[in-house]
Image 1 (spheres, rainbow, N blue to C red):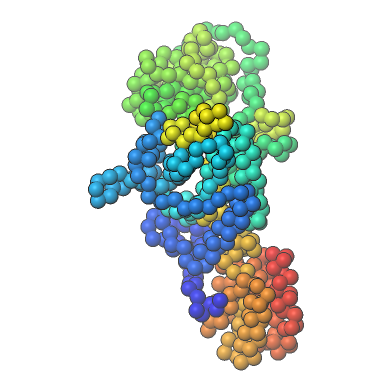
Image 2: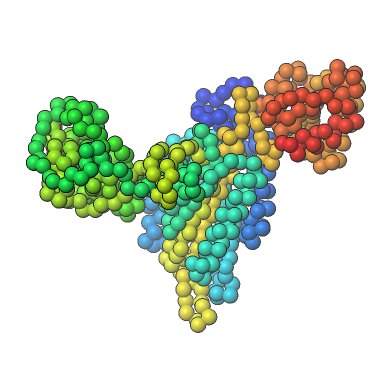
Length: 576
């Protein structure tokens, strides 16, 4: 392809709304263009990388015996409502783009396709002899994010591969789950990406188990912990740790001292209260009040730790969970925020105690009155938990739950997510099979999602320098950029055309920069877009019978004879 006939326009300006490097570079390199908040056009260079990503996905899913289809992007509301009891029409809330047709019927622009695929399979599959099945699509999705950001990393409209498997039993699902995990590993390895597989929360999709595939990047939106001594890795929403060490001064302390109320004017933050009362933060219990659709919930946790709200929502079985406002905090505790405690909560308020706090004796907590805290509070005597559960947010330095190791914290970009759905959708929608005895059973399902655009953006987050993108070869829009420095020079033009033809004959994916532009402009564009290999034909080097070739990742220039240039470019591609 000749650049002069191609649709490729770069810019030196950094978009004002671009917060992460992939967003900045994809816009500057002319790969995407914003149409509205979280909605982008894929320009030709960007679409080539997207198309290459899709090709890798299709290749590996073919190996995993998946069958491709395409489902509608727009889905009728009654299909979502057919999975009665799952609450999906409500769970998605405002993220679900609801629309009406001319007959005033409700539809949505699908953020996911569990209902649609279940409806398809239940109409055609009847017998255990027809299972297992694994169907996938690459389709445009839409989630009306409250704050779309990061370009393709968190857009409202996005391109996704989603697969769904159907089984007669859990053992069959387990086999496919492993096969799909292996396929995902091959996909990310084929893309040349550093990634981690982590245990994850199932979220709104539901199911019994799930794993995320995280591309490691400092700019990642997800916090992940992993143990360097074993294979344990988990998203912090799901992560666990061994029981915390006893709080300072708690070893062997079992006798409850007399509780008293102490004035603590203006002291609301745990570090301030600890200093004021001469207690360590791990002997303070902080109490947070949450608003849910089931009523107010007070959560007590050790003062030096944070609440994992995903774990909390799962434990409570609620879909709405938010810190209560000042008025509701007063309703639950009788005090302004900052002085809440577990003693003497209002009737109807559920008290959830994290295991870290449940072990404490003679601890400090808010007194449920302004400017005061209670000292020497003990469970059982002074307050009684309705539930003791693990709602601890795990972090750096915590103990690995699987071995004696210590957890490390890093950032990652979620690019793939696989789930064991079980019968959540098939049971509610009547997607059944008949066994060898003629008995009906709901099919057991799996779900496997992979963000196409997110993975391409994640590759940029992991592979760039101050000049621009440094593409891994499999995802580069073009593998090679051939630059004619003096395109009007007959000898340069002749040598460039010959090298271009030779590279194309050898199957090299090459873009020929034949533009009438200054060399500096061409080289800056080359570095910005990040073609893995560059070949430069210029009058000066050509006079010596040489062509300049280089790898984008190190930009070390090599002068090679014109006759050997194509072979050297191919060799550099293998290095790339």
